[in-house]
Length: 498
Figure 1: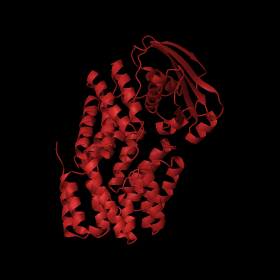
Figure 2: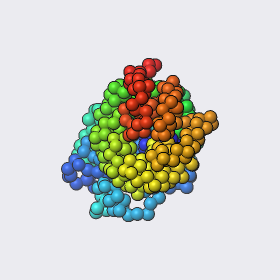
Figure 3: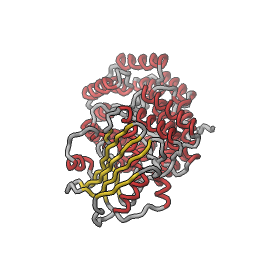
Figure 4: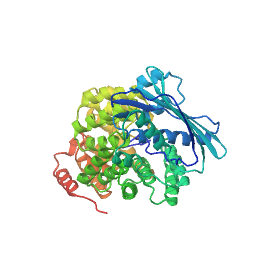
């Protein structure tokens, strides 16, 4: 998870690679009926049926990677991973799952491993009628090479009577490796990263690095490493140096394969976070969604960046698109909340935050936006309660937003107490200096606020760069100070070069 600035993370990235050599394929079912191209499908979590719990990462990886390949089929909308994985081990009917996901077809599968071989069975079902539209099963040696998703993608595209363009084929295959061991390590890394924990991220970084050691041009592994570093930078590690590691990994990803959308998404965000180069960041993020318009990771990063730039209407439009693809993702909903909040659209933010909590009351993203909204709407006691609930989810970490509410209530001592907690936290763990500055600005202590903002500038805080573009009243206490005006000009004029 992400604490402080960002708690939570976008869904996993990847494409599964199995070679056809060594497979014995048997087909059953009937061709899909002629349909319009506006079809929708969800790849439900492949069931690990072999009784070997150590293969869970493989089943999850196959699910994510098949979805990534299938969304390149023209006219086919594929539900995002975060939504579909909510149905792992679910006993709901196919009809009910499809209804909640907003799709017309479900792709299900089972994985069984025995010694050095595995058996994978896949089935495509019409959710409304229950009719089986297509099915295959595959037997393979674990040591064999990689392209199952190509077979499944081509089969479903053929049944829909469409053909993947060369560019879509390149996107579907982007970032792969020919090294079976490297790919296996990559799947383990993604499994750990998606646990959204400090320990999971540490293990994920180790696995990504091991995969890269076996194949230095493994673009997917480089992109995964970039995302893992980005999460660590926002929660568990010194911000600027770790964002630089993320940017370097993302650059290696797109150097290895320029068709990998997630590589461009990670590189774009890090150009903003590490280099403060916002025009270059925007260009990379736009390239990522051009390559893969339905990539949940690319849309999430793009929406977040636009929100931080206070391009609120555009950010909300992208977030709405992400929500359509990943309708049960609390993080997709939270991205929209953040953009609405940064844009000062507080009533809408509060309403969207309620929708987020209905999906997952434990999700926290960037700030207690309900607390912010309630404060700005004048509902101060309710704001305090919202922040206390927020802090219960973050292990009691001090909240600059709560301090702002206390300041608005005239409770200076309570706000000062939080400032001191934030300062103390910097001695033991990462804590962005901007948050301390915000508290002092909120109680009118301009000198200390400016001291902490200057510290943020020296530390090349990415939060400071975006605060200068989109901060919803957090620094009102120093906004008219000549020192702040001069700092804002310096920040906007600064780009850190490699």
